[in-house]
Length: 426
Ligand SMILES: Nc1ncnc2c1ncn2[C@@H]1O[C@H](COP(=O)(O)OP(=O)(O)OP(=O)(O)O)[C@@H](O)[C@H]1O
Ligand SMILES: [Mg+2]
Image (cartoon, rainbow, N blue to C red):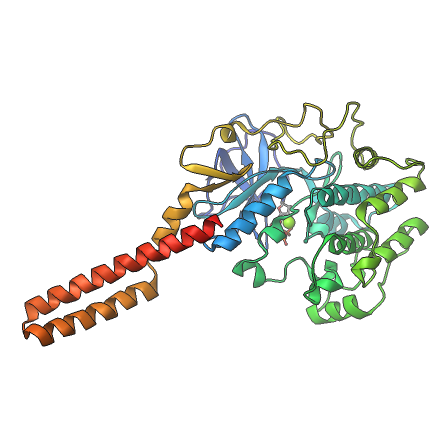
């Protein structure tokens, strides 16, 4: 493991022999964990600031997959920093795409419950408020998390933070993603098994299942075989632990089978905050998120909030993970290395580096395409045979065959690369 500049991070594992050692300006100093989407590394820059770098297992050579990835990550970057780990930027060129986000020190909710038991009392209330505040911020930026579960909530020093939002969707159309069950079954809403349209209500369902897990130590539809869980999610009533009355009522509503019957994240937040008298009258969204943020454990911000979906490129916090409660000018500035992009990089969306390398990578991919080589070989042989029939001499026949091979190979290579390039730009 490369030396850590800052304090030790509990649970950080050594890099494996073939792990990358850098990602953009960050030195990778260890493994934070691995999941179905890839491996997450702890990165440090020269100033010792820390980030989480998720190297995703995905092939972005398909232009559609690539453009969906870029679009979803750009949207995730616009999520306001309330109870979330901010997405800082992404790199889609190079051998392996990666997404960089704020590093949150702490146990995941899953690990916390496994090692220390269920969350109760005020801590449960703060957890529910913090996670639904994050969802309200995520949804108001037009993003759907699609993979909310206890592994994607980190219990930071200053309250719970939701991580990984938008990534499942960014990987949505790719082979890698479709070959695994996205999200964990026990937290997936019924519409996800029916292949219906997915929207914010699927996150509300996942939120309720996550809070029920936190309170009781097991998800409300069990966690045994995939099909048994799916059947219960689709047809059975949830099996909930004992919960405070308001939370119990809310969680049952949020676990409704029909997505249209589930309340929106902001409604859930208002009802939780009313319960402890934090909200007595209708609030603007920004103020509501601010109260949610404070209730979840963050210090009170005493300056005006920025727009919830700023258009300016977002930022990397300048210090180690203090909760970015907010904002004024304090919405951090674009990381220095992204302020001036290298000339060969084309920034298709703020904070997502993509471009120059794509055409080159496509050309390399097409050059090794087995079908292209076989077709050229076949037509080259046909050319050689025709040359032999015409001249009855081996030399000229071989020359005709070689020229036919080279011409067919090059023409196919150029046409395939150009077509890929056009559809990339669409
Ligand atoms: N921003 C972050 N800050 C701190 N730790 C993180 C961060 N992102 C990920 N981690 C750590 O890395 C581990 C692996 O994360 P990863 O998202 O790959 O797996 P997962 O959440 O278990 O599964 P999935 O791939 O379905 O999301 C997490 O359990 C968490 O401990
Ligand atoms: Mg995760």
